[in-house]
Image (tube, rainbow, N blue to C red; front, side, top):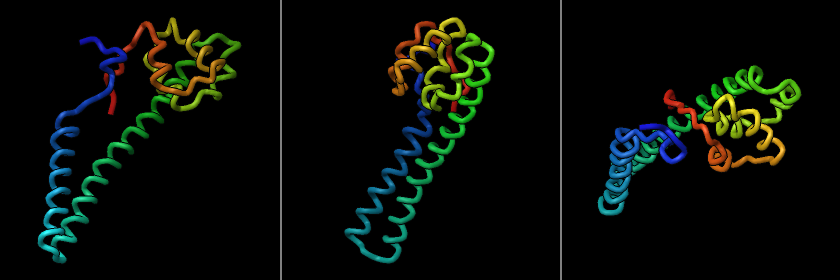
Length: 142
């Protein structure tokens, strides 16, 4: 399947369904046990259930943050090579969010899109991604 705006979000069933599902069931079960059989064990069980969900959430957020930092660096280097000379001094004006969205643009359309993003002060990732016509897949994502 060809990657595009509609299907580019990464979905990992083992993580998004199984792991998060088991953690959510565990949380519900722990709350039930706390309400019906209040004890030190049920309190600790609930605290662990909350901690497991937070661990899963933050591990995902941390990985995505590192990925965004790498994309930011990659896009700055790519723009130094592709953008016209008069636009290169404006590369620091791009936010990380804008660079992450622009990464799917082809080399041919990147200069025009970059100018539209800067001049229009577009910050919405989805809006920027929707402007891309020649979608370049990014298959190495967290």
